[in-house]
Image (cartoon, rainbow, N blue to C red; front, side, top):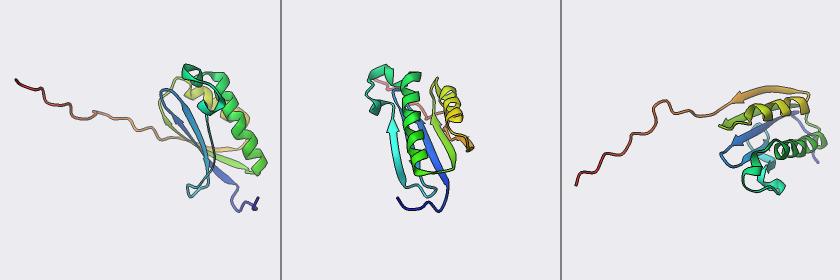
Length: 119
């Protein structure tokens, strides 16, 4: 593996209704490693349980420790009831979390509804 010029890595966490996706990228956006709770051999509603999330976070932690990155910038996006638990698990697993940001887009009024059809 090539020597790391920057020791900062970006961990993007996308919370969907059925799955949680993790991707580790450089600062310029090149994906180096990714995993999801569905790729850990869990199906259906079991993908958003705490045990599968902890397995996915442990997989990311082992990869980052092997790649010898020092600090992590965490970006989260989406809504899920386990978001706080995932962030707590990330903070306890990684010693140097430099920044946590939430980039969830929240519609304040939503799209314009369709006009009622008159027959």
